[in-house]
Length: 115
Image (cartoon, rainbow, N blue to C red; front, side, top):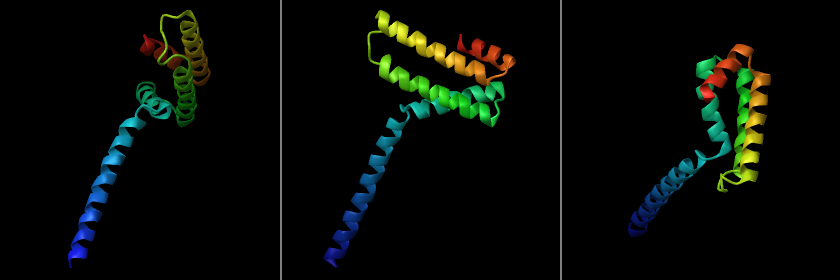
């Protein structure tokens, strides 16, 4: 009987420990490029009335931008000329990708949202 109670107690501690570990991973997932891109596309989609194809294309473009920012901009001196050039380059790539995907009216609204 004593071993049975000990086994139940150990099982409870394992379950509680797993919940804590999964809660920590959820907070880290919000910083992933995919999570950031998904949130941005969801916000834009509501305002611009995007189709499914447009949402997928914009998601890919935003993921690419976030990955490039993580590699070349994030954590570096934002006043450095090379970092400024990289940031501008990746912003322009995103703008071109968005321009290809959206209709002219949607693109005008998107530009207004960026300011």
